[in-house]
Image (cartoon, rainbow, N blue to C red; front, top):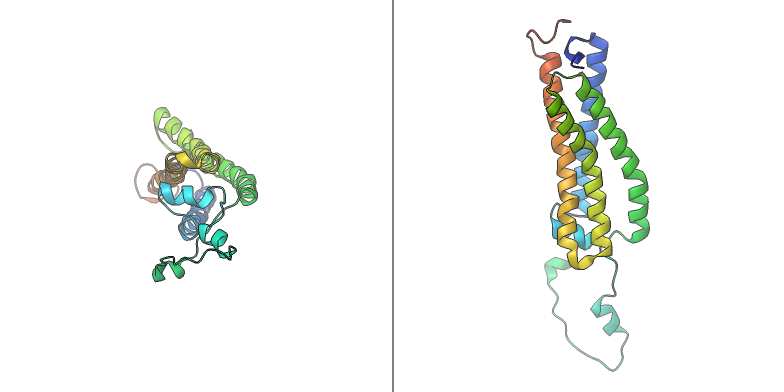
Length: 187
């Protein structure tokens, strides 16, 4: 515990490269979420809610009803992305193991940092709770659309929790491994 700052160059380099690549992946993952869902609880809930028939689609097939509907021109350029249940199953199948491996690797890096046992425990719990919150929120919003904003908030909170955990580990690791001082004895 706490020996990563004094580890050989190749170990510190491997940790640095791992954290750098993980950061790039997290950045693009957040960008994808923003493109196809949202960073708001209501946006997440709307993306994973079960698909319902659109009111205009039902009326188009009726030959006896002629009615004018107001359409906002700006809304025509913004496609609505939906994640149906089959895609949510696939996302869960792929993302939960990746989240678990990410949390485990962050925990291994944490064990090598000079932190109090309480700080390490808190960060490990945060790293493993984040995916749990994320997917409970997504599935909750899917199965209980009337509580979608609440479950959406859990999903958004889980995503941000993992991001915050990563940033803390990254910053502490870079400071302890690479800044000159008594921490790093291998130059």
